Length: 192
Length: 144
Image (tube, rainbow over all chains, first blue to last red; front, side, top):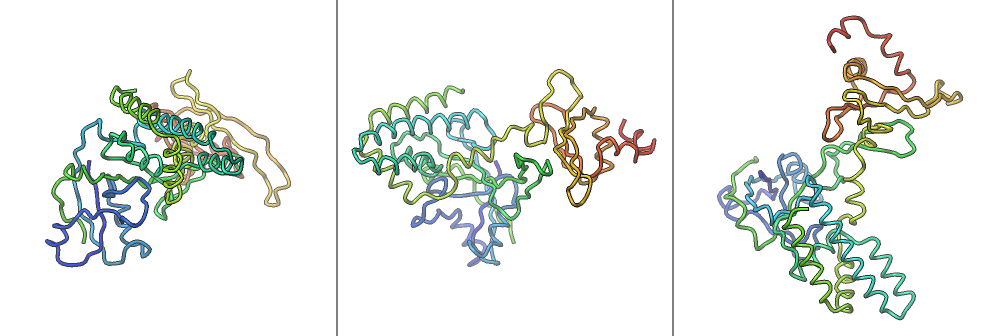
């Protein structure tokens, strides 16, 4: 799998190639957990990330990697229905067990608050928690979101009461967990 | 489900069953306190809209190899939205859809997952069937 990693273009090319990939910010939670984040397949979103002043600067570099990951260590939440089913089942198991924990609470308000949180459980919490329990066997997770200025929202039905949209291209990302950094090939300079 | 996924689920179940409930809840609250990104529901909601719904199809015709059903939603003939049109469903062959795509360059289109059926939205204020009157014979020839 071809992947792209965006970083600030500081220092010479050789020194950057010697440092990449950069680990995600340890002081801030990441949506797929702490690790190395890369854009997959295309450099489109690697450039978009680099151009976004909120995250980077106008002077950015993109480095290309090849990722070789064994099947059983790769969770693809974008392209594999089987993997999506696995993850949703995992979430249901998680929520069921947490419901039992919440039920133990004697305070009604707390129970209500906890249940609300559980209804809105985040992807990051599920991954982080199972990694803490040491039962998340995957070393690479691929996922997609749609919050991007490069993603176009296409209406298919005018005045549709259902408001269907097709969102393309989806912003697909992988996280490589720290213990699996060696699955990434030697970096190749890509931009500028 | 593949065996390695089943194994992963079994391991997760065992870990949950063995976990101390109070600790599990406290860890969950802690993770949620600092959580970022989408909820599970949001992420899968964005990903898992049925393909035929995304494509604007009222239903997915599985009996006929090259027929699609395009569902037109209620539309209005006049700019003041005073005259409502009835909802109509039209069936098109792939050839006809191809012709429509020539008439309407901005026609959103796509292929349904796992088969070759097209779907599309016909722009408002002009009947789907009207589109065929705008075509000359060459257009039909191109599409066939």
